[in-house]
Length: 152
Image (cartoon, rainbow, N blue to C red; front, top):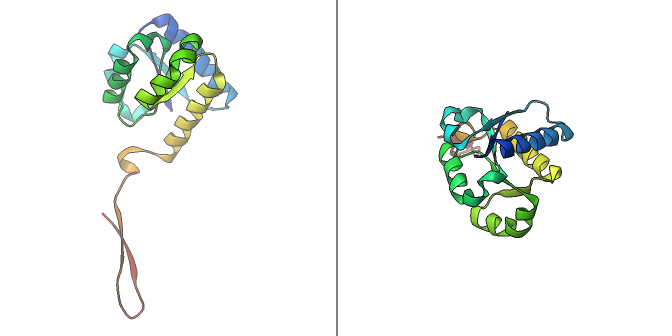
């Protein structure tokens, strides 16, 4: 399971990477890899590998554009936005309402761990084309009452 740490500022990426690794350790998530990446390099990562994306606090001044860019590369991937604690206190509700994403403070390991657990659950469940499909149920009239399940 691969989680991308996305931020324009290398020092903020490193800080978020450390917090995410500690959250994964505390949540006992064993099979997880983190890759910290500059937003300009997102196209180099395979969509099949990514289980979640954390957008770091350095992207806050243009968080809407950053999230849209992540969504364009990884449309079915869970995205979380991590903010500095002070910014979280004043902006989290607005961002949650506008972006419909998980918004977390950098200082709250429990919320970051919760996001990682959700990514792990979603990854284990499977998503995308393999998990989606159309099923039709037809009940046919007959002597015994045959029910047929047809996968399209």
